[in-house]
Structure formats: C-alpha cells, structure tokens
Length: 198
Ligand code: ITT
Image (cartoon, rainbow, N blue to C red):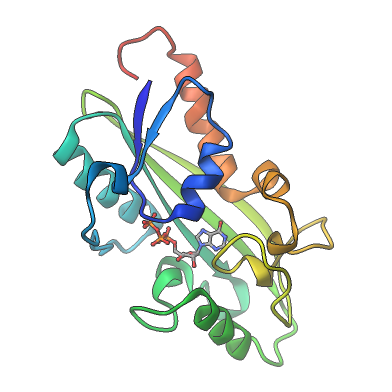
C-alpha cells in the first residue's frame, strides 16, 4: 500500500521505516516535492498533527499521516511541549534546544518529563483518526549519547539507565512515544484490512 508520512524530519521517517512491512511504500514530503514549511499554528500536538496531515492530503489525496511530538517537562509547567522544535528560537538547532533545557532545569530536583506523539491519519476518503503515544522518563544533567535526535541525549526513559541517544534505534523504537502511537495506527490497518478505506 502507498501511504504518505507528512514529515520533513528524516529521523522520524527512518524510525517509522523500521516499523512498517516491506510491502508498504512510504513517501515523505521530499518524495512529493513539498519543500515549503507547513505552519504549525495549533495550540496542541493533536491540532498540529491534523494541520500537517490536512495540508498534504489536500495536495495529493492519498492516505496520509502526520506526527506532532513534544517533550513535556513537569517542573517547567509542561514546556517546551508544543513548542519543542522552536524552544530556543524559530530556527534553533537540536543542540541549542537541549542547552536551553539544561539551563532552565539548573538546580531543579524534579526531573520528570515525558514525550508525547499525536498522530493524525487521513484515509483515502478523507476520514480522520487520531492516535496518541507517550513515554515517561527523566531529564539528565548533561547531554549523553550521540544516536537519535532532538532531546534524545537528555531523555532517560523510565526503567533504563541509558538515554534514548545511547540506545540503538531498535531499542528506542521498542518503547518510544512515536512507536506506541504508530503501532495503534498499524493495528487500525490490521483491523480493517481487506477494507478499501485504507
Ligand atoms: P515535522 O513537523 O516535519 O514532522 P519536526 O521536527 O518539526 O518535523 P515536531 O514538530 O513533531 O517535528 O517535533 C518537535 C521537536 O521535538 C523536534 O524538532 C525535536 O526537537 C523534538 N522531537 C520530536 N520527536 C523526538 C524524538 O523522538 N526524540 C527526541 N526529540 C524529539
């Protein structure tokens, strides 16, 4: 089956590619020639996922899903949350965002945080469904590890000694927010398989 993942983030695409069956053809924005930034003006992750999926569906009219993800830090009243990409500024790098997070967390004992992913899926008929995945963990005091992307070098998932950035991609994929949300989408496909709605 042919499906679009409405992302321009290669790290996200590579994580999802490791989870899909071989007979799926997964296209991203680059494959569709969509190079413009899709304005993420929503107030929530779900709204932003819907905006991205809608934007692409209007252009190509084939099944599409989009993922919007945020890091929610308890001691920072949920920041950076929906602003995770732009935390340290509109064009902030992953490193700058991590450095700002470390700065804001200086001297704070409560390091509890979670990643949340909202997926919006739009089927061939334009019908929408939403799926949510989350993983709880803690923010470390220093950048640790070189795998992954974004806030991975600061995030130690609950029950593990390693950060996401110290784990092989397969291990992150076994427990991550994105994987949990995507697996729900995947079981949705399995539940309706044989159905033309996919
Ligand atoms: P698209 O909108 O094109 O999918 P994006 O990078 O802008 O890509 P998001 O708005 O969903 O994606 O993500 C916001 C930021 O959250 C992202 O720039 C990363 O810094 C961070 N992030 C997202 N997923 C992450 C993950 O699995 N691990 C660590 N950080 C992540």
